[in-house]
Image 1 (cartoon, rainbow, N blue to C red):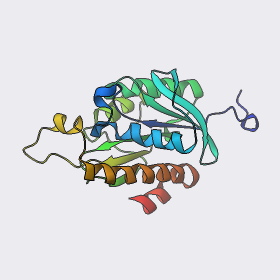
Image 2: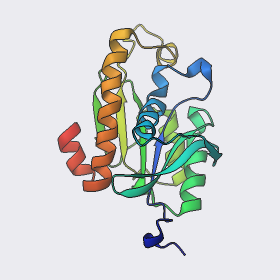
Image 3: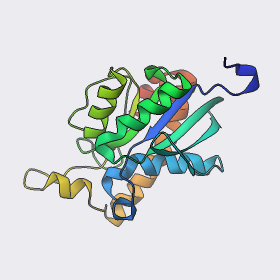
Image 4: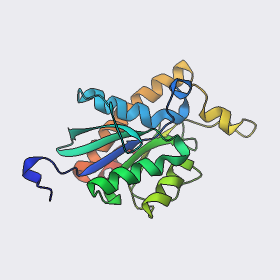
Length: 195
């Protein structure tokens, strides 16, 4: 049905996780949104199509045709959007790349993994439930944590400081490079280069 020559086959799905709406726009939980927005901007493409419960677009990236999306379901139901798009384009889980925030990493640190548990992240938990597997690559962007005394919910929906934002912007740029590396060379190479 799909022919590579005609450029119609979508080979990768790149999902940046976050929460829709102005209230959450610049919060720590929206690191995935920020990273895929930067990717799209670098390709001069807007994520302005609406389908699969997501804002998305199709683009050439890393020498392949990708669907880049921001699920609009709210974080805890991200899997609904990811599954709908993956099913529609017949994209296998190992070609579903998810970019998201991680409180267990220092601010701006990246961690690439080819598989793994949700690690307490509700968006990932929901994607695992909807894809029926945890075997999909992911790029985690560290946001730091509030520490023992801090409130985790307030932290993730809080806005990073100016200093943190500078580190995070660099992290978004590295996340885009890491995504390119994963698609072109595989997770192992990306782990060596970016972890």
